[in-house]
Image 1 (spheres, rainbow, N blue to C red):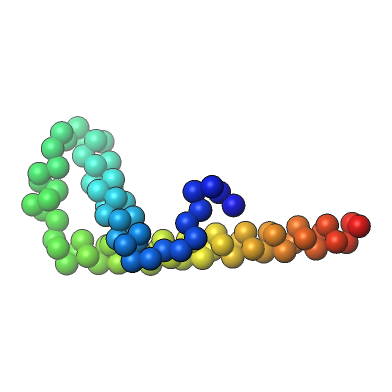
Image 2: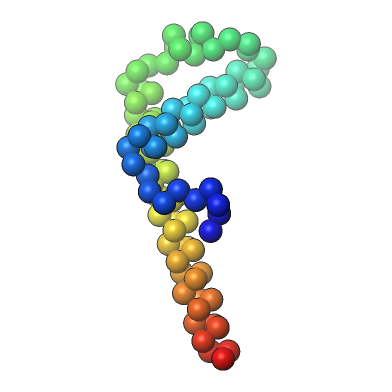
Length: 87
């Protein structure tokens, strides 16, 4: 597993992760079109929509982590079985 692997996703970690993802998404759009200030994004963003997007990102993060963990556990099992068979 990656050394950056997060063993659990408590609420504070998810909150930080989603805040950063949202900030990066806005910043990416701004960078692509040459905007130097994020003032408009803060004024434009609908709080309800932002919260819904954060919840969607949290759901995605949980699913991604579960898939990653499940895949790695399956790979470890497969490796172990192959090793046992070859001995």
